[in-house]
Amino acid sequence: LEPDLVVRRQEALAAARLRMQEELNAQAERYKEKQRQLEEEKRRQKIAMWESMQEGKSYKGNLKLNQQEAESAASTSSAVPKSKPNKKPLRGGGYNPLSGEGGGTCSWRPGRRGPSAGG
Image (tube, rainbow, N blue to C red; front, side, top):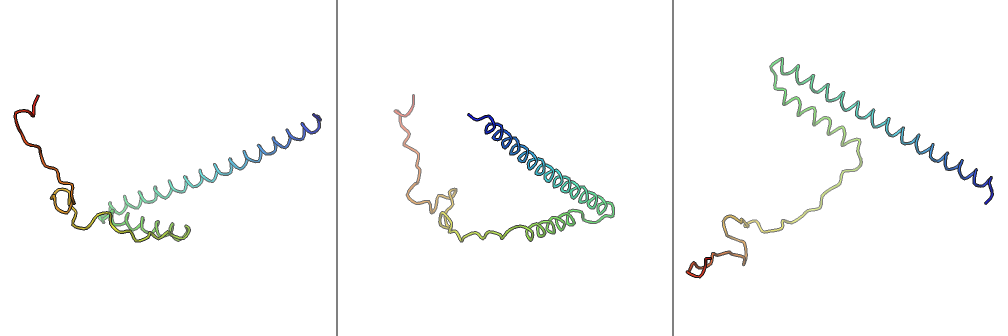
């Protein structure tokens, strides 16, 4: 093997590892920032809930409104929402396993009690 080829290959490998490490560090930094923002938003919601509770208002109603606003903001920024296909139910509407009606041919009946059924 040629020594200069081996050295170049090792340098390229080290450079690729360095690039991958930098990319990983950048991803970790973005994740930390996102977590920090989420925690800040939770803290704001708790403060708003506490203040509305101190004023005697319904704090649960405010919390629901804040969640709906957050969901609507998240849905507008995300990709196209997926629509679910219309699915028919697995059984007919009259099926009720507790009533014994509409179950079909599977009806369980206890066996006869007799002198030979014990042991």
